[in-house]
Image 1 (tube, one colour):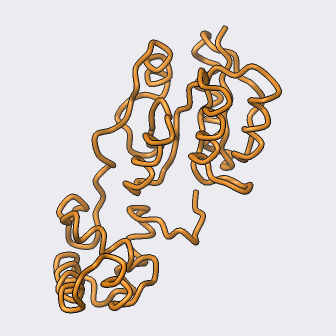
Image 2 (cartoon, one colour):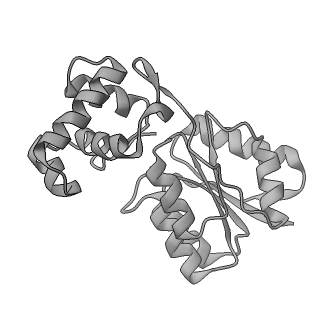
Length: 211
């Protein structure tokens, strides 16, 4: 029987995933963990076939970093990244780390049990794009790629000149992008915009650990 490890620091999500595995009758549930760092050690100590890995847990590194470490040492382990974070950077990082899939806790249309089955059958399951959320007056997919890059740096607390330096843009271009974003979303200033975007988990500040 295939052995599955659940790693999630939020009890309600952890218990839901545990219940899905138990009810399937097809898999053995290993003792669950609350941090990604311990998951790396667990995979060294006993046989694990699949890890359901939350992104933001306790420990020195996040779930995607832990996934990459696990796969370097145990390339046959299947890792499904599970998260409520819809930041597109996480989708990219999960693919690059070698994860077998990503499942959004609050947004994915697929049932978790089906995703687990399909991954064990050899599929790689990633959404084409992160879920769409409302940001003020618009949907997140109404922002252009350039606007998302600027918005990410706004959320990180960058000033206009710093955004320009980071993205290689003129100051006037940065201000034009910011003005467009504020106009589209309807927020009166960058601070209100950044707070709203972070709360929606569309972009997660690197200094903040949520979930």
